[in-house]
Amino acid sequence: AQSVTQLGSHVSVSEGALVLLRCNYSSSVPPYLFWYVQYPNQGLQLLLKYTTGATLVKGINGFEAEFKKSETSFHLTKPSAHMSDAAEYFCAVSERTSGSRLTFGEGTQLTVNP
Amino acid sequence: GAVVSQHPSRVICKSGTSVKIECRSLDFQATTMFWYRQFPKQSLMLMATSNEGSKATYEQGVEKDKFLINHASLTLSTLTVTSAHPEDSSFYICSARRTGGWDTQYFGPGTRLTVL
Image 1 (tube, chains in turn red, purple):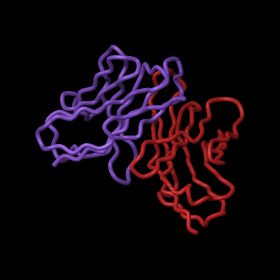
Image 2: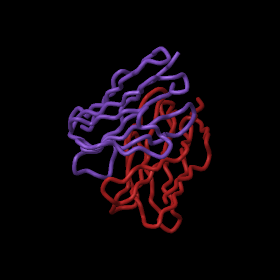
Image 3: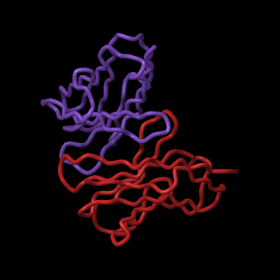
Image 4: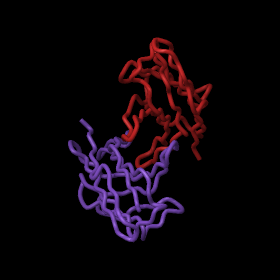
């Protein structure tokens, strides 16, 4: 069975500072990996995904994530935080098979301080 | 591309009534759609997987007679909460996966259900 752990339910950074949101997964084989962002009272928006190929994945809004198989991690980073980045972030995994479901982490609330 | 809509965005109903929520993929065909429930400050909980033209697959603990799912076309799935009670109040989110594109789910904006 797959599982996802997001370290830190709340992360607070200053505007312009580095954003680092941690995600570790447990899976018998390398899964597909995703980061989604959720703004208040809205659905989830896909930030980026890793399926195959280059392990450093660039997404929207300046975010990127690196798949590290040896560490079973897929941490999300952004060099310089913006006030508009304040939101809930979810890491998710799915098996590399058709019809597989997403397994979500518990989410990390990012606060950006002026 | 890959836009998913939900209607209504917010609904308030009386206890004992039924509520239907629609999920549409606007610019792609979706063989598979998913329904999630999200409680405040929590992650998403998968309720059921809906495949076009067949019965939905419900997760353990989800009452299929209470949460009726219909996926009659490649662009529309509906969730009907029957005989709603206050404990059914929640944020319901659907997602859709492109036909043939089995790695990514695209999410709708969610529906806030409040049962009085």
